[in-house]
Length: 168
Image (cartoon, rainbow, N blue to C red; front, side, top):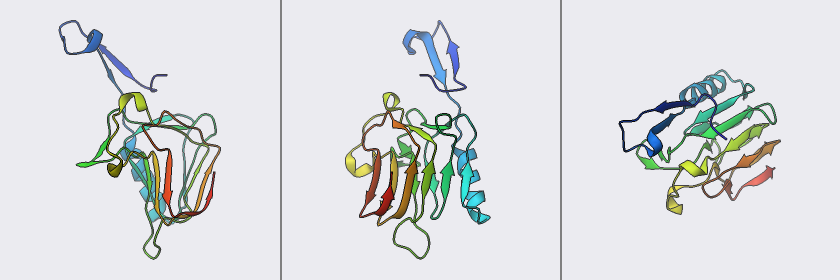
């Protein structure tokens, strides 16, 4: 399928564009990340997504936090060709980060959200650089992924080295 809110620009004078068409998609990364950060800073433990598709590059989920959507409707799609986070190669869409006093992320949940890795518009990075769509880090505890559909991945879907209490 095509991303929601896609804009197509047709042109006849640009030979670089295949078929003289350029597709442009919106980017919800800053909006989503700011909402996650604001909720976490206010000691609210989850962000509820609306019934729509969001397009994002990289999202960081803090310790003891969840992202909740409407199963079968809420969706996060990886932004096309967003395999770098700042200057570091990284194909992840969601990364959980540990809190201050723990060795790995704890009690992170993704509920009722479809995750689309958009693999047709990405390239495979060396494994050491990170091709995992959802990265829960090392020694994570209490990870919950429920009522989610994970599709179109570049490589690995879910990663959590040495993790315990992971429920899918």
